[in-house]
Length: 203
Ligand code: SF4
Image (tube, rainbow, N blue to C red; front, side, top):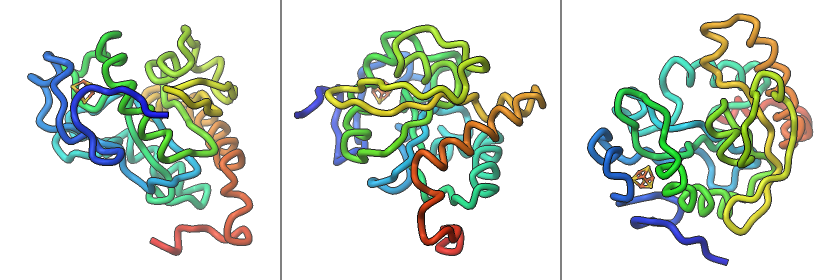
């Protein structure tokens, strides 16, 4: 089954898209997801910030550093997982993506998830959690909850997680992030991989 999406895609990469006029003004480039195209675990963030827009890669700023370190602590390398966003173009002044922009870009995400076919999707923060679950979400309260959610034509197991940046401003979120990532690693089967050996040695 094929999803509809605006713009042009090459596989799971968006190569050209002008569906969101304000974001086309504010972006330097389209920021596609990174990581294996058959990843068991996919993280979905909100959208590119300044550093992501500059470097063309999701989660490379301070919050990306927090996520990388938290994964490393669990024996998982950044290159083991796929990391992507709800919208692929940086909103102006780091505002939240608007409802229409999220809707415009959902077809791209649907293609990416369908082709990757992960065991688990982890939503990082309020915007992606609400976008995929299609309801309001109290992220801190619901962190660690697993739901089934439809994206495009397919159904996925979705784990709600706090945004990694939340730990930079509120130390009490560190344990919430840690416990949720413990759960993510287990649900995605990393605990069973390579006879319990970390994959970090591969990178
Ligand atoms: S955010 Fe997505 S839908 Fe909007 S212009 Fe960028 S690539 Fe296109």
